[in-house]
Amino acid sequence: MLLDALPVLGAEVAGAVVDRIPPAELTRIRRAGRLAWLPVRLLVESCEAAAPLLGEEGLRRWGAAALYAAAGAPLTRAFFLAALGSKRHNPAVLLSFLLKAWPLLYSGCGDLLMVAREPGSVRLMQGPTPVELRRSATVLPLVGAFAAIPAYCGLEGKAEAEWATDTEWFQYRITWRPAGDR
Image 1 (tube, rainbow, N blue to C red):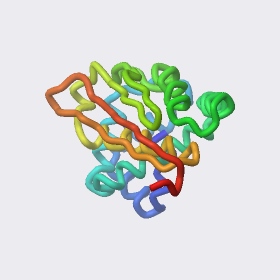
Image 2 (image 1 turned 60 degrees about the horizontal axis):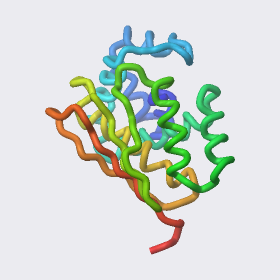
Image 3 (image 1 turned 120 degrees about the horizontal axis):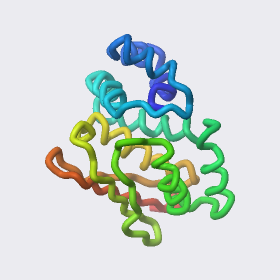
Image 4 (image 1 turned 90 degrees about the horizontal axis):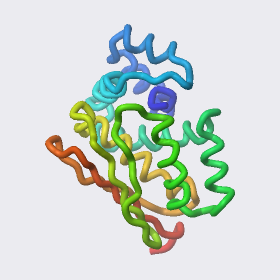
């Protein structure tokens, strides 16, 4: 999904990121079917290739674009439609559906659990997080995807992460409010 979202960042940037991914890895990613499990290493290599070109904010935007790509993809579209159909404009419901889809989408990335849910916010825990994913290049796109969920529901929101390279469990906090509400 991340490679599918690159064009949103612009053709020049997308091309530069793709050029930094080793050709054999890029071929393997592109040849994989939608239901194929790809090694975590390929995610890490793609994110590391993008990081110097995109910077922190660009990695977040890339993650947000990947969320929107997932919302339209055949495998995950049903999750988004079901969540929006049951409780429209509720990011907590959409997140709960995405948590159920996490093991279908990602293998070897740790579990993703909702540990707190309050009006206008949720707290998620990811773990045990493999050592190779304990880097900003892989955390920031996920933060960007989480931050895009309130916007997908028509709300203003943000996401923050608490993580460290020596910690197995990462924490994410997603907050939201009605658009235009200050």
